Image (cartoon, rainbow, N blue to C red; front, side):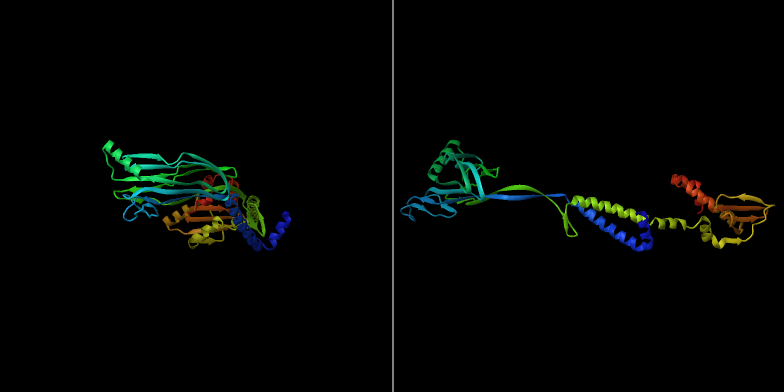
Length: 378
C-alpha cells in the first residue's frame, strides 16, 4: 500500500495534493455539520384540543310603567333601567367541544356575588352543587335558567347600610359559575377551572353590563414524539452518528496524507535554508574582501573571536577591512582582520554547525539558542 501511494504521489504531486485538500475540506464541512446536528428531535404534537365555550343571555323583567303598561320580560342591551326592573333573568350555557371524544367529570355551582366597593361582599347561591360525567365530542356542563332578584338585592343593601352606617358609591353584581373538574383524553387528565363571570355595575338609576357575555378557552392534549434526524448524502439518508464517525476519520486520514505528501517539501526547505556563512556574506558582502590564499600567520598573534559581531566592532573601531577566506575541504569560512602583528579571526565550520543542530533538536529551544554559535549573528 505504501509503495503504491508513493508511486502515485511521485507521478503528479500537485494534482494529488489539490484533490486531497478538496477532500479534506469536504470531509471537514460534513463533520462540522453532522456534529452540529442533534441525533434526535423532540416534537410536540397536539393530538386533541377541547374548546370550553360559555355564554350568557339575559333580559329584564319590568314592573308596569308608562313605557310598558303591562310590564313583563323584555330584551335589553348593556343598560338596564334600575327603577322599573325587578328581575334580570339569564340563561347560562357552558360546553366542552373537542375534535375527538373526551371524558368530562365536572361539577358546577352558580353563585351571585354582591360587592360594595372595598367595604364588604356577600354571596348568594343560585343553585346547589351538581356533578356531571359525560363522554363525547360535545359535553354540556351547564344549561340552566337563573335570575337576579333586584328587589332582594335592594333590600339587602338598604339593611346593611342601616346597620353598619356606611354607604358605598359603587356596587357590583357578579354571576360566578364555579365550574371545576377534569377532562380526560387517551389516559391524560387536564384540570378545568372556569371562572367566566357575568358582571353588572349598579349606579343610582341604572344597571350597566361590565363584562363580556361570551367566553372561550382551550385545553390542548399534547404528546411528545422523539424522532431520529437524518442526513442526506449522495442520495442516501442516514443517521448523523455514522456520518460523524466516518467524516472525522476521513478528516484525520486526509490530514495525514497531506502531511506525508508535503514532508519532502518541508525537508527540502530546511535543507535549502541558507548557511550561516551565506547569511553573513549576503548581509555584509559590501564590507568583505575575499582572498584566495590563506594568510601567512607565523609571526602574528592570533585572536579568535566567538562571533561575527566582534569582527564588525573591531573593524569599525580601527577602520580596517574584513577579509574572507573559504576553506573548501573543511567546509569552513574564515573572516579575519589584520592589525599589524595581530590577526583577529572568526571561523564558521558549516559541517560542525549542522552536526550541532542535529544533536540539539531534542533539547529545549532556549538551550539551543544559547549553545549554537550560529545564533550570535545580529
